[in-house]
Image (cartoon, rainbow, N blue to C red; front, side):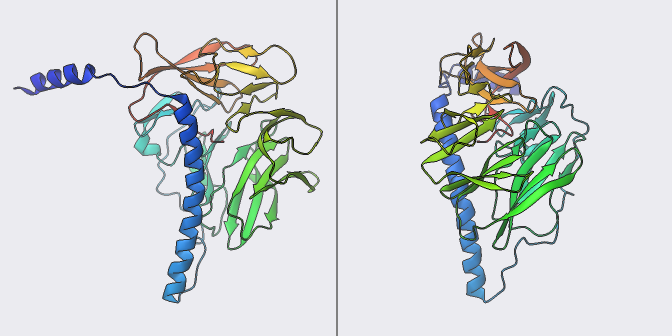
Length: 360
């Protein structure tokens, strides 16, 4: 049998095998378990490090080195973010970013646990916030030693060129708001939670950072430096945009925002007018008609995948009806018109489609 005969035989047999279609409910549950697992692994790694040092009689040094090392990041060349990051992937196989396609292994530091902004993608390298900028280069946003066992999801402000992130050095956790346009910090504040095991920045909107430490959620106003309690554990801030707060559980404190109940995986459009929740029908928050996108299923939890892009548009991956699973078509849909531009096909060999930089 020649190599050509073998290839044709394999293609004929493999092509006849039906692959079960993706299940968005499974994807949602998988994402929630993955986020919980990340928190457990971070805590476990920190405990193991302490035990190892104690057993050897050594001294625990936080952060391994005195500063960032970006030499191992190869420059990607200029990236056009003028229409958004447009970052989506076939997990482990290929990654699409700003209209270009890369082998996933070349950008394995990027995943959903990051944030897409107009100035690039913010991600974490061993507890250190990093920026893959539009010039294609990676730079560190924080100098000096950091605890590599600590990792918190960054959030971007849709009204300002700002991003909020947290770092930990020893027993001190610091929340910083950084201006990506100037490269300078806007403000920072220490958080008193030396023993907290569940820490996250849940939202950033118009200079107000929503910080969760274990069961307590508080809002930090960067301009005034004041803190306000949002919830003591009965509710969870899901997203905040444009004067609207999405929450899960009991209504949080009244901070002068429009409070809308929503699942933990939901997100708001930048203007706060619509809720994106696993459907191409975006629910209105102000009583106006819902926004229906031109592409994607409008039945909630039907097979499809969605994300808010860095420019406020909605990315949609819907099944390709002509070819069937695992073939998808990816679109970039404008808000508030709902008009969609096709970005191209996506064949998923590594799992369900992923949108990079939109972890919740």
